[in-house]
Length: 386
Image (cartoon, rainbow, N blue to C red):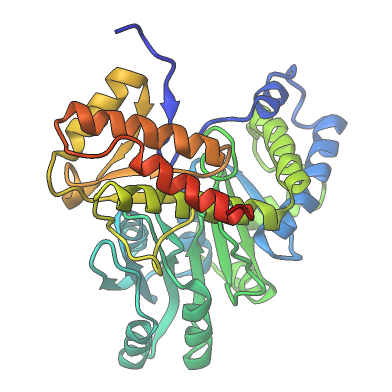
């Protein structure tokens, strides 16, 4: 078979819009120049509605994990008691970061594929009244679960003074989550998922209370010291050399999102979720998550009649379609399809049709077109057709 241009349908990194790629190809500028100050000034107000905060959103040069680490190192001290909700590989990463910084970590491990129950968080707060922060992943990319962050935050604030710190790396820009509205104290994200950029930028949003804690925190930190970033941002600068090409791209990506309208962005992601889930159900493929717990940015399938890795291999070799596999104990047991950022319902239909062909290649008894038809039906109903 001829080499195919890769069709990227993993939950990050995600495809880049041509306008963003073009913006990133601009000539380099000085990071202390007036042009850079103007660029940062343009970006700042466009980030506020996406994160749902009036405070300046800090932009770090680093992957999403750098923001997770910044969240830990700026808000806690060694020995602090924290609760980490672990619903998959990235909740586990949050716990590992907390442990690395000497925190007393209470892990609440949830069956992978399930969302956390608010009453379980409440039980931990009752059992450990000294908990200073609750860490939770909004969209658990490894399982395609969307945790009920707003409900968790409400419960935490009702019972305690603990901070609610949220990993929104694979949800911000695709799912409707707002820091102030939803009672979140600190919210982080990354560039390479629904924000439609390459990896290399991460974001930290916070409320006034959290910033007071960050300012008073005496824990040593250097590159990830959020106080340096906020101070320099108020001068129209960054404390260290930023990824300038990514900043050009970020400015363009934010323009694209606001041109579409944030509500329309969220509606598009929910539509693609429903299309993907309907397609897999029509093909008789079990989904890892329930409808209530399903993320709008990624869908996870746990096949019973064939090897998930074989399907991933076939669709990639035959059509260039790149799907994600499982992580940790789900490795080889599931496959995941990303539908976030620069992705449309037409892209979902393309991916489903290729998956159907792959299933046929594996000898599965399916009706070709059944998945596509189910997805098209969802799309037609959404758009007011009959």
